[in-house]
Amino acid sequence: MAHGCYWGKCTFCDISLDYIRNYEPITASLLVDRMEEMIAQTGQNGFHFVDEAAPPALMRALAIEIIRRKLIVSWWANIRFEKSFTRDLCLLLKASGCIAISGGLEVASDRLLTLIQKGITVAQVARVNKHFTEAGIMVHAYLMYGFPTQNEQETIDSLEMVRQLFEAGILQSAFWHLFTMTAHSPVGLDPEKYQVKKVSEAIGTFANNDIAHTDPTGADHESFSFGLKKSLLNYMHGACFDYPLQKWFDHKVPKTSIAPDYIVKAIEEDELITANPNTKVIYLSNQPKTEIITKSKKGSQWELLSLSFETKKETINIKVDVGQGNWLVQILQSASISNPKTVTLQEVKTDYENAGLQDFELFWDNKPVNTLFKAGLLQL
Image (cartoon, rainbow, N blue to C red; front, side, top):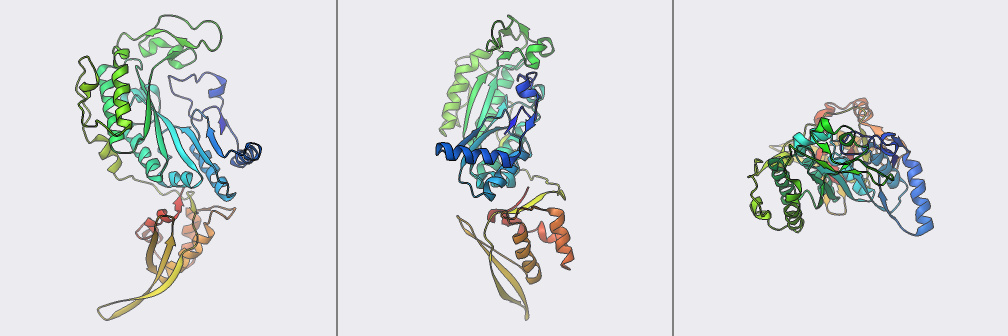
């Protein structure tokens, strides 16, 4: 999707090199032009975007362009587990044909994620994984052990985080990699800052990028290799979640210091989403069927508008005030993804108030409108 990496800060990565340092995205329309051309040439419609980390805004634009052109594709990409991947964005990506993502959870330790300058926390990763999983997108995580200064406790705590992610059902695949110091990474360029020592220098051709090193303050990282991989294989098959972590190792390891419900609490915590006037409002589905119904209570009668939305999985029905319901039908037409112009939340609010309706936030942010993300009404 882009030349270079939009983040470009991870300290284990060769961020001093041009192919990562110089970030140059291209437009979604050009991307989809190229996809259509390759489909015509090869007959294949599966695409792997090989960015170091695909930019969320460009992924959103790509998804919208794919859907507008009615292109039938499957695609997957590498990402950073950042908070931009909201529930609604993941639903949009799924609707466009995204079937899987892979991202770097790395050491699953907040101290070491800070040292890596990953810009994420384990709790944030858990929430993003939940969004992808609930949208029906498979999640693969790159895992790392042996980062400079990582001690035994942090290695075991990282394993516990991974165990909980699999047990919660929000991670489907992963692989452990032993940290490698490379010549063009911040760690390789300034090892003293990370308390490690070079044993040798990278020599010869560009591909000889790896540098042997020692980590005086860290654990005996290679002694954890077999146990980490064996436990992970079981977790990926939904097995052995109740095994004590010690069982995976033939040497003494510390007990985890992570609470057994850490990940569950992280994904159950209410997410505070601040409304942004420039948020895009997009509707993916067909227009609802409408019917005026009469309700009565204690001798009083009033009319409501019933709106029925047919999805592939279910029929979603909401009942609202007739005036608000008629306005909602009209705004769904304006927000339809088939329209070349995308409407913003501010434009939606202005239109609501111009229609003489009251309390936009109370109507828009409340049930039943809140449930319509299931029918394809997304805020992006």
